[in-house]
Length: 163
Image (tube, rainbow, N blue to C red; front, side, top):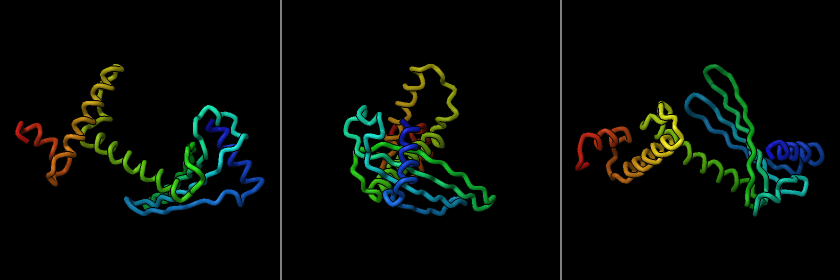
């Protein structure tokens, strides 16, 4: 389906570029500039697999360009999404960005504080069980009203049953 959506965007760009009105955001931080360009189109019969997805209304193309300010190297990636939302490019781009913001924060904490990427567990059940326990612990730590860092909360939990 990804190839079909990419071809659909390519076709529309060639035939009627004015149909694709992008929204663009630029963020600076952590030594890089990230430019996100989002395009959204209403689903048409041209996408043959769309009937397989109940409620599909639109397809989305997001291109992210990362420019490392120190090395001046640039990386570009494009990905595609399907959506049950009608075409509203600004709202859609904001929703996607918010989703990934939440997702990235959770994964960063699990990776840095819980060392999830360093895990040597490989059995299917073991991976799922430990991931579930780590997420449970993460949520418990988030409930603690203290302003300590996540690593500090985890250490205090290990040192004190009362905590």
